[in-house]
Structure formats: C-alpha cells, structure tokens
Amino acid sequence: MDLRKTETGLAWFTLGALVVYFPVETYVSVPEGLWNPFYIVDLIAMALLFWGAMRSLRARPDRSPAVLCAAYAWSVANGWRATFGRMFELLEGGKLDYGAAEMCAVAIATAVGLACLALSFFLVVRSSPARE
Image (cartoon, rainbow, N blue to C red; front, side):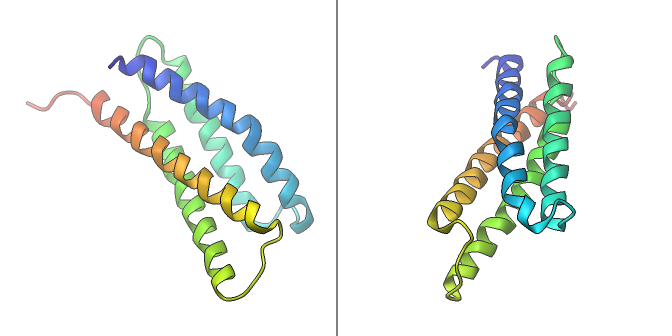
C-alpha cells in the first residue's frame, strides 16, 4: 500500500466532502441562526477538515495525516452525538425537521466519517518513527 497516495486520496475526498458539507449544513442551520452552538461545532469541524486536508496535500513528498486524523475525530464525535440525538428524539415520539432523510443522511455521514477516522488513524500510526 502506498501510504502517500492513500493519504492524498483521503485529503482530496475530504475537500470534496466539504464542498457538500459546508453549504448543506449552513443552509439547514440558518433557521436556528449561525451562532447556534450546534452550527459552531460543525463550523469548527469544517475548518479542521479543511486545515487537515490542506496540510496533508502541502506536505508532499512527506506525509502529514495527524491534523486530518484529529479533524475526523472531532467530526465523528459530533456526528455520533447528532445521530444518536436524532435517534432518541424519534424513540421518544418526536419528529425531525427533515424527516427520515435527515436521520439517514446524518447516520451515513457519521459512518463514512468513522471509516475516514479509522483510515487516518492508520496513516498516523504508520507515519510514526519505528520503535527500537
């Protein structure tokens, strides 16, 4: 496995995901206000993901997956909270603003984020100097 190519692919995937994540999250957050703490957590996630992807891409020919890994950890923690917050809302008989599509989108995004976190963690472990 070429770790540099894998990291580059993850960085480009991250930037592509941000092209969707930023406008969609901003659009659905406008009714609650962009100073809403839940949106600010997402905004921090987006900034970390962008920083991590750019840092990784600029590190060529070296690898630099650590910030990207931290960004995915932050994002997945938020996604986990969002997914299960929605699930408990439904279990208590509540309704979601965007119905079943909202639950599916958040759960799928969290699952994809978990896969990216696992991959970025693997890249961080493999980028560490060998132990003697």
